[in-house]
Amino acid sequence: MKIHVYAALKDYFQPEFEVSELVRNTDELKALLLTLNDKAGEILSSCRFAVEEGFIDNAFKLNEYDTVVIIPPSSGG
Amino acid sequence: MAGVGSLAHHPGAGAVVLFSGEVRDNNQGRAVTFLEYEAYVPLAASMIAEILATAKQRWSLHAAIAQHRVGKVAAGDTAVVVVTASAHRSEAYAANRYIIDRIKHETPIWKCEHYADGTKEWGNNCNCHAVTGDVSKHIYEHDR
Image (tube, rainbow over all chains, first blue to last red; front, top):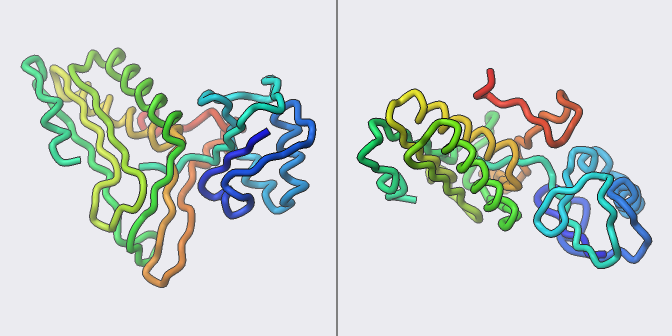
């Protein structure tokens, strides 16, 4: 599974990386990411997740071929 | 972004409202030299298109246009422009505020503030979820 992160999340993770562990939903992905950087808990709790340019929630079933985009709170304008 | 306003002229529009979001040279007492905007462009573009379409229908606008820059934007320059045109001014004002509020809260666009002392900081993220308990639910100025 490929992971892309943006903005402040790049202070915690590489902009793009891959995970090989079995991850079935966004809660499991968040848990995995916390094992990679346990300081990212607060920002991850405020992030949205997207696959194929659409937002997903925890009910969305992830698969190993997905590219998951992790989206911190907006600060445009 | 110069000239965006001229795209909104319409013979049925008695009002054209232009909002220009500019980069301030200071924030919370610190001197700002420039902002670096980043976006998840495919999703940001589709979300802005949906916001514009919703506003156009809700206020019967003749035109609704929004452009947001990415990359480096110097203090004093324009970062985002929203233009709305309607028969009367109240609709154009209301729609314009609705559009910029939703762009600022919802679209995947972020700014990193670069300060005169050489430091930088990702800035002023939407924190509505702290109140709403849901990262997808926001509190808008246009609803207040």
